[in-house]
Amino acid sequence: MNYKEIEQAVSDIDITLPPPEKEPERQYYFISKLREWMNQKKKEKGRSLTCCVNTFGCQMNARDSEKILGILNMIGYEENESEDADLVIFNTCTVRENANLKVYGRLGQLKKYKKKNPEMVTMLCGCMMQEKEVVEKIKKSYRNVDIIFGTHNIFKFAELLAMKVLDRADSKKMIIDVWEDTTEIVEELPIERKYRFKSGVNIMFGCNNFCSYCIVPYVRGRERSREPEDIIAEIKCLVADGVVEVMLLGQNVNSYGKNLKNPISFTELLRRVEAIEGLERIRFMTSHPKDLSDELIAYMGESKKLCKQMHLPLQSGSDRLLKIMNRHYTKEDYLLLVDKIRKAVPDIAITTDIIVGFPGETEEDFAETLDVVEKVQYDSAFTFIYSKRTGTPAASMEEQIPEEVVKERFDKLLKRIQDIASDKAKKDVGKTVDVLVEEKNEQDENFVTGRTSQNYVVHFPGDESLIGKIVPVKLCESKGFYYMGEMVNA
Ligand code: SAH
Ligand code: SF4
Ligand code: F3S
Image (cartoon, rainbow, N blue to C red; front, side):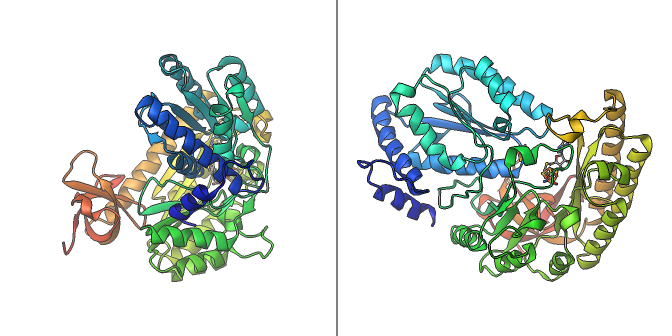
């Protein structure tokens, strides 16, 4: 169903009856009730209530925030850039410790807004809320929070908000609804996209890999795939609404479909997505090297719509560490994979994630990582300092590495990655490539900004009318991480 059809279904719900049990109708019921409440509030205040959704973390969280905004929009909230709003939501990330610290800092700052506007509602959701210690800490030290929910019940957002604002008896209590895990996937709820012409699409949720440093499987639950029919229907709706590029999202897209009643492979899903008329570009994220199939590599060589970009997290180049990290591949396996991918798609951009300072990492281990970086010549890489996550196997490993050593290795790695990326980018200067125009340039209004198939950013002279279009652009100058270009045949 598209946005309009969902809106119709919401309007058709009879709110004089008790709420239905079945989803998503139950949520349509609460959205409808909240719309009625919003109309009253508008009359009272002479304006709509405002909301601010702050997103931390990865693409999954970004997509979840679009789901929350879709519901808020249907209720009648107006989006506000600042946190001085009637409803503030933090969609949190906990993959590294500093992600958590940011949220606590921001929560403290909210107190001043709440003083000014006592009816303000504060909500916390996302991965951090799946941790019991976090919820305990908030209960104790951040009494200004009204509602806490987790990653598994975002679909219940309208119901939770209704509990708070419609049921006055409950209005002083902190509402906490965090589920340990779920097998439920609720479809057909409204989603508000950040971009008109491109969109993320969840193809699966959760993760079963339990890499020994990573908290994601604990906070996102077990892997479950969406039905291919639901994914295709969603993308068709998106395309009808102007989307030309989709990013298929999952923690490990290469294992898509294995747990379905009628299993299908990720490559088969891609074939079906590619057949959708009007869709022009397909990206996906993330690929675990252990599950990347020859079938997919061959398909990448044939496909007309798959972008020439592959994010292939390495984490470490040391076989010893890869084993302790529970990654199930060796340095040699990884390098072989990169070779195969480059043979199939010669001009593909390969990017990666690397962790520095995993417990017990020696100079030799680190040298192996640098060696892979030299051999692969990444187009770009995210480098992370290892962060101890409570409850993961790595957190209790001995030999946590001293901060100064990690910092030194980190700086060395980052410098090498940046130099390689910058040299690589120079090689494409002079070429003409297709660019999907995304927005007006922030600094110069006579320029627009877009992305190449390889996911490089390009700035070039142009106006707003180009936004959402794919146009040929000559890459005139490389600035390391982005290009300055010029549109061809304008
Ligand atoms: N599912 C994706 C990654 C999700 S988390 C994958 O497997 O590739 C994104 C990145 O965060 C990871 O690739 C890893 O490099 C990094 N990361 C995860 N846990 C971390 C930790 N405890 N400390 C530092 N970096 C971490
Ligand atoms: Fe974390 Fe590993 Fe799962 Fe990625 S594959 S989310 S790094 S456990
Ligand atoms: Fe963070 Fe959760 Fe993503 S922990 S990286 S927001 S899956």
